[in-house]
Length: 367
Picture 1 (cartoon, rainbow, N blue to C red):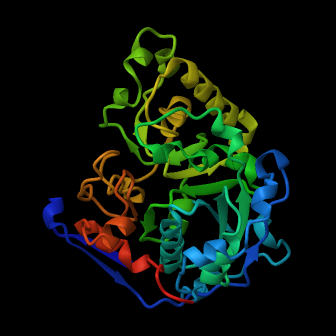
Picture 2: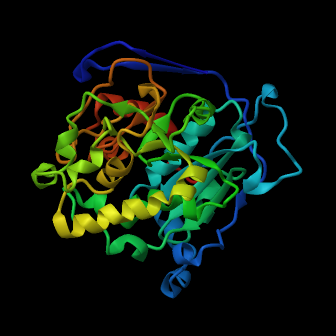
């Protein structure tokens, strides 16, 4: 159980209190099986297969997370259907890469700490480099998870330069291919960025009704939507006409609930790729992987409470300045922007709200 109390309206004096009840949670044996279907996405380069299995572990050391058990009221899982296809599971997809690995581990840790039924959570880790599976298993020995290799070459030629180099990394675009990467029996998934922590039971987010929509996310209709595209985009209706008959609002793609059945049926991956191809020739936006999602889905999103994405805590995409919380309750804290809490804490120049990320950090301790 969690309570967050906001005691200040300005980031310079921001203070937040989190109170956690003692954890009574644990996990069944780990399921860490590299996905073997869809070779187009999961092909492993021969040079990566020969990489030393100890290279990543030599660079990173994480403390083993404490065990967490399902509460009595969670009931029993369906033992007749084992593995990833168990219909009682909550599916969460997160990317793993060296630069954001510390954030991803903290995100997983936070989800487990606040889940009433952590044994019912299955993590889908998207990677573009090998040897991360062992590290995850050693940090979370009983976690249910699976590792999916995403081939960077799938999108490398579709990626355009962005205002921040980190936004150009191929793994940022792996979310576009979740419907192809994950098993057909996985009908819904929560996609989360690596720079956030969940401070509420993720089952609440999982149970969100999407109605007739394919994705759900917190929308921010007060934001200046036009700034996400270039002036050329808005000249005439060649491109801007795509929003005709829609009421598009900004949404952050770092927290999404996705209906994979509808996504597969409509073929949204191809629609996103088409806008990325147009961007290569016409330069209609500046911001990485977000605008193609806006072009396809803005105005067609099932709205989710803002509490599930208190975003922007990493500041803007250039300076990464400190930010305060948005008004209202908090279920998820998201350090979107250029400032990451682990970097600011290590540099001894943290922002006030970075202290809320620190309790979930498992980095820097031997197993």
